[in-house]
Length: 502
Image (tube, rainbow, N blue to C red; front, side, top):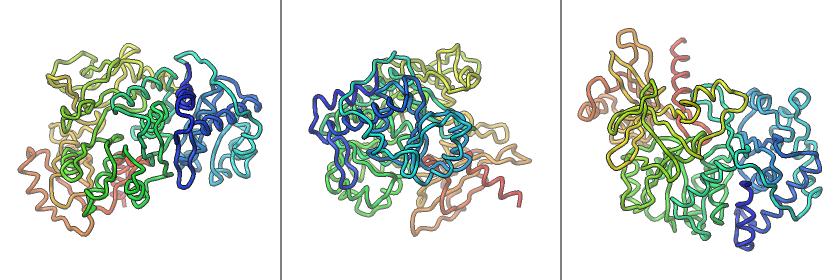
């Protein structure tokens, strides 16, 4: 087994079909596979063997994909790092993963070259590095077949975003990533004529597995952007180059601010949101204005995917992440690990081929993240209804305890999104002498609109119990986000507490 066989199969059956478009560049499946072969055999001439760690630290590009599959073809492990990393962040992950070769951008070169001597890093593939990518490919051969690996061998290591502490390297097997690519393609009814827009970073499980690997598996075309750019996204959609649109909730919120959105959706047949919880109000508004449902699923880097809400569009349930995918088991458990009944809230726990192998060089975190070594503990609070549909209530670590009462921030955020003028919001708990924690809301208004906090509180009091209504509401210009567009509540809380000291 080898995840790269998916590329080889697409190149056999659809050699002339476009695999990647990036601006004016277009590669067919035959061309992408040939480039990956040259990378693979070039790396072998550098002495790289199966199991060796090879790093990728670059923004999305066609070259990134060719290098990635070249790494997989020879059984090496792709260590995928954010292309935005610099300085100490980059040093921490390079030191932790110790790749022998690193494919990167010139902007990282100074930082990277300082790390070579002490971390096992031998070769930097980069302009002005040890060699550039074209040099490596000239060393390689056009023909090569992916090495057969054990199904449980590690294919890639993806680092978590660090929203709950220091980033952890999630080891994903060839079997697990294959399972994910095929499950996603199945639940999305993917076909070779699909054109999937990808501006989400490939180091993130959403960009790498959900979009890139599932599209390669189903022989579709990837329309690439290095990052989100509203004008370029709209241009691609209007030109009919996109049938599948993948984004995070904040992007859909921005699109809903367009006055003529319904005229801009082009040939979109499928819209999907992940990486953060989607407010029900946003899903409803999008459907009303475009006629397209925003599909959702549930998963994370460690267990991708777990549920899907839209195999049968007519049974899509707004607010739910759907039933579990075939071949995966999910349970709701209490803090002691006891399985709870339908309708009871508890931690979502998952078992199946989608579960990670563990955390790289971190056995303690691996043990702590599992029940009995086989059920992954998601850290999310969920509930199961009588039809087998899951609902994610909130992150366990985000729970606010105010005056002895439990408040889930997501419930408050759902209410906020129904209020006029609210474009984005985040609810966190802040220390309070009287209440222990006070519910605090930070709100980004829609462009050109002003929000009265008094009117907002009055509106919330009709929707929420009194103890859930935020005691503090602040209007802000923006909220801190990850490169994938996820609102970082931990960072927001840190910033607020830091400012309070001054």
